Length: 247
Length: 304
Image (tube, each protein chain N blue to C red):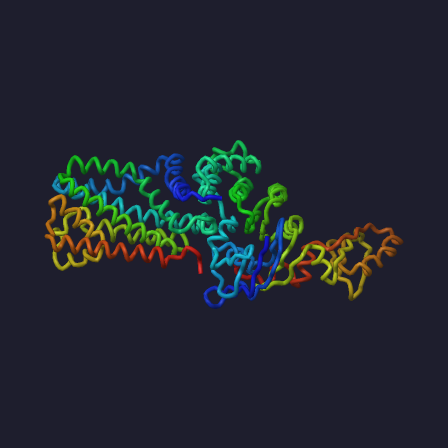
């Protein structure tokens, strides 16, 4: 029988997002609320001054949340429902499964993304090239978070452990680092700590296009190199070191 | 269909031996039942042969394909319902079956058509659009079986598919499996010995990760010392004989296990004393106890 890879990818998208949204529409509010809550707080606290930064930051958070959600979803499907065991023993490969699941997380956040894109188009003034750079930045941080999510999910043994990972990752990658505010707001020596998070580099790249932070050519290049290196390493780990078939 | 293993072993965390040097070579069709106590290695065997789990040493082959180095090829031919697998509560039965078929590479349309057909065959028509969380325990198990049976896979692994089901639901599932076995090999692990006996065309007994025996029920029966059971319904029946095993069930009911000669030798005495009795071949439960010694559940271990 001729196997259709497109169908295998679509199966993950349907199961993990489309059917969930159709059968339980309330989940849409959940995905919308988290980035918008911080966006609202930052906007009100700064009397609107940081709205453009926060609007771009919300996009970054949305991308990172895809990874943490993926980690929880995969862990749930693997450990609680034993679905992943059925998939492992099927003609679907780990790469096809994970690509489908990654797309499902994007599909899940389409309403949030649509809202944030409109918000950015209204309040953030950027050039076409700037828009493209932000898009590539988002794609890179999405790849990073998805790889991290998949890597961790293969090591979690139950959903409680999975929640634990998400609880750690979410503040470390989105709330504390300068995602919703410029890095210049962090005094030294704490600013060095911010550079431990890959999302700081993604934010610097995005904020450099919105005019809130000027890292210079060297700083901009370093941000890209570090972000791409971390993402590449993690993707390699996710593909090579994660446990699809158990030992 | 051919299943082969050679010194197949699995040790967890370098100390728990789940399978030990399992070697077999079987040409099978129909239903292959695997029985054993908790911790016997049934699930480990299924997980290795279904390419979910790597063995520690040794090798396994499905239709002469290595389950380790040719896992991709093996996966084209197998489908698995793992122990404790259940339908995703937010999906409908049709969505459950069709998405699994899509993961196997069917198009959306083909998967839906085959899914509807499978649900109809398994008596779940009319439930296609109900959320799976609303199904009964028996319907959920049927749905999981429908999910793999609907595929083209000629070899299906079912790891304890009837655990926790009431007797009638189990019987329904047995009927379905009997119907489905015509075109494929079903490898079934179970704790219900009656189920293994009724369904199994061949039965494998595992204990502490080792192969105890394999064969048809009659083959297994022919190898035990006490292949017949005499059931006597009388409060006056008393007997002492070292070659017989006597189990008083109640004041008026006694079971006696023994060889054909010994058991039929008692018949004249029972007839003369006008005692009600029946003579039966030993069931798989009796055979299992004789093979493993002691009651089922003794020396129970963590389930592998």
